[in-house]
Length: 340
Ligand code: FA5
Image: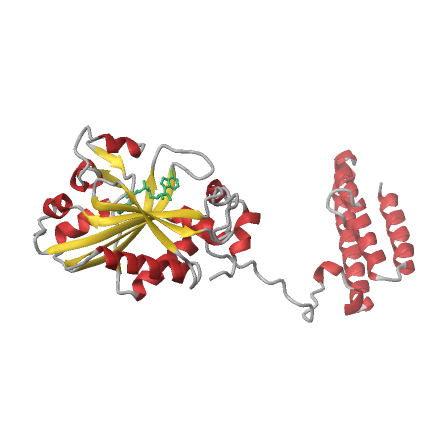
């Protein structure tokens, strides 16, 4: 057994003498000192097979040999100099760095910020409200009496204790008017919910509500405000049109269209050959709504409007399936990096 240690030492010395570079030295180190299959590992395992009376001498000689091989390899490594050291130790400080990946805003967040910015510059204040809403704020105070057929227009998710997941951001109008005296000029972005799922509808989506109430506010103010908004958001030559429509909380009510951003009104797949794209609901605040929050409808009038952020984002960025907003596909989301 002891003679085997002597043989290992002789062979090691011969092999070390033949080493010319760092790679060869590294192979030699692994061959003798490698943790799993190194020769010295094998030598140490063999202690178990040595007769008891020779165990202590064998152990001591084996340890000496391991120390000897380690120090010789270290010495040789120093001798080879910095350039031929193990590559893992080498760090080239002149190499260019790896730039960290920068995040960006989600397209819905981008769109919300754009919409908010336009109205903030007009003097509107941003207000938020709860996502779990009372029947009063989501429906009743907005002039949807119980059993009113218009409640069916919004496929509602019902919660316990007379609460619903809000189907629109209009309840924030009510909450604000309940605790504020006119003049009111607010913009209310937020998450909304309906039992809906196709390429233009999702169960979770986002809306922005706008409300202005003061003495003498007219439909002309509504038109002027919406025209300005559309030109700021889309382009200075955007054309709008108002079509009569029905929402229980406004009278008169309208749906607002813009001339198709894709074909300029000629008719295409995006506008379904009509030349127009619907972008929001709007109208003059209903007298019943003003009375429900304690405003004197003989003095005050107001307008309100509400739009889907998902829909505006689709038109602004040319997206044809709203479900993309919720799939967390990085290849899709990365396209918006640096937009704002
Ligand atoms: C309303 O929700 C009214 N509260 C808007 C309003 C406010 C009218 C103030 C008058 C005065 P409507 O149900 O049409 O209206 O929804 C408004 C917008 O929300 C739609 O134009 C659409 O862009 C968006 N929307 C509605 N349901 C979904 C859905 N499931 N997924 C994505 N967007 C939706």
